[in-house]
Length: 204
Image (tube, rainbow, N blue to C red):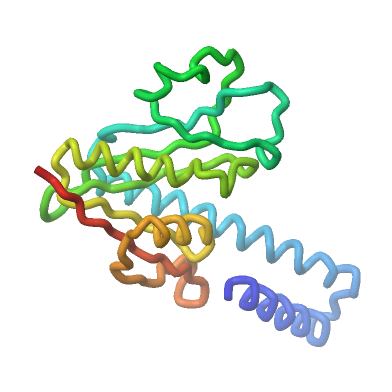
């Protein structure tokens, strides 16, 4: 939707400039890149503002998890058989003796301001070369296990329509959809759909 609106606005502006202002074709060719840059800057500015506001709604981080690859230095992720183990299991595994390590994913868990004792899953990131290798799922599982030991009632998370991998991950992990809404980025013409997910925990 964002790309369609940008294209339509670019075509309309180009027609107005060409017909009424006498702008040359060479000048019109620069219109599309300029529009793309403007939209990117607008999205970035709004994103920073939303991130600042969001940070005010979240208490300090409870815990952060890091996914670390241990193996050959020049290993190709797509040609490897990946074995996911947690830190406790790693101490008794031969993988603990491997010299080369590389961080391939991170996630944060914070206590959310609001009703009940809930956790907020955020800052989930996986290196592109390690997508669809079980890294994101392992990070979410580790966060859930920690939240249960801390007695949290539930975990909440938000993913945008641009984060298709995160949406698929949360759905496959059994998280429930708890609504969606459009976040305005630049008035009513430029919006981003955000989906809210949650999962109830068997807290003590």
